[in-house]
Image (cartoon, rainbow, N blue to C red; front, side):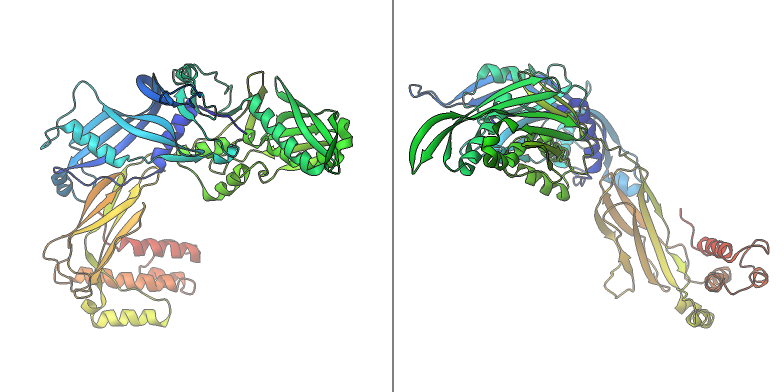
Length: 611
């Protein structure tokens, strides 16, 4: 029975989490244009502002004598999201000229991306938060970009392509009584800059003064020390209670029928109280015989414990309605579900892009209708016709937090809570690549391992293979995606050349591997382009080895095979044997596990060094 929904969010926590969400959501870089590549966007900070003025249209229902258009137009402040960024731009030729590393950018631009924030109703009860790209603010002049006539427009087009944010849907339809809709809705930053507020109204008057004040920040900030607050109007809660009592008592009382239900509210500090008095009618054989039977009043007291809203219902003075009272308990508890933060959970998760599937079911259950109670709700009878219900905060695991504040006054009932911001750190793209070099054959432990050594001694060239690899990593904790791996120049990998190519993972760390026969000869280096969300790199794989296997190389390859065999047999082979064959340094006191570790080091050092 909600007529007004209001969610207040700490502006600082909101902007902190938006920054973290940008870091946590890798986005593919746009393709190069006019020979230039947007190589990386570094997000430095996020803030909210309301310096601009915009026009808003307020809908209303015309009175019978009013032939107007059914709306008012107002001018008020526009809430905007400002993201400070550093954009790095590199020429394609520069990327190609600096293989196996992230090329030095040709142009670096420090600026601020500005987005307009607006809330609309996309369908009945469903709000859409639009984030519209407005401008790229830079210093006095925009740096020039080689070959680009309008460098600022080039940068704006690239950034809009990268940050093409879709409208975020907030389905609040279950908060509305049947037949109602939100007539007006909006988002605003309060005058202090401390709170970001989303508000939606069922009221159909479209009051221009009320909404102008809202957009201009004339809003009572009710966060206190909380990170978010759900604000409910006493008249909404009273109407919900009245409707619950009316409908459920009518079904449960038999000869009694509910004529009306009076609900009186009082708010005092950390407690909200409602006094409920049903007025009944008595019917016999379908005929009304007594009108306005006054039953004793009963009350509801609402407060909180850590992480929970606590609803206490005292119906001991109305024990003549015993059957009806039991029927309304679940409904009365459910009337306060919106206070328990499901609205905060929905909006914060959707807006900040961290909605988890396992959380959506709990939220949907809480918002599925007046009969739904969140999982974990406990209702206990604490005395004759006295009940206590504890309703837990339904925030999903991605937003760890709790209800920490509860306040009530003549204007509103407010529940506030906390949520934790992640702490991802951006990193630098690191590339490590090796040339093609001869690799000893794989050695199996057991009898087959010694046959590998015999085969190598008989035909070294036929036993070895060629191998090259590159590994891409990030030095930070923020995820990095690998969006495309492009073979710029590479011999066929269809089996005709014996060359195989493994393009690696879809996220960093990622290893690309190339393998071919020992007879592989490259006319020119293999080139591969890897496009990640923090940069584009060209990998160059050339050949270190010549066509003739030298004696030192034969010894190295054979030593590698023998070291692998010794590793397999380290449990059985005595220390003197390993030392005699110069397979391991160290004293006679080494354990078998220490021997294995040193043999592994020996094996690794025989692989061609990275450069």
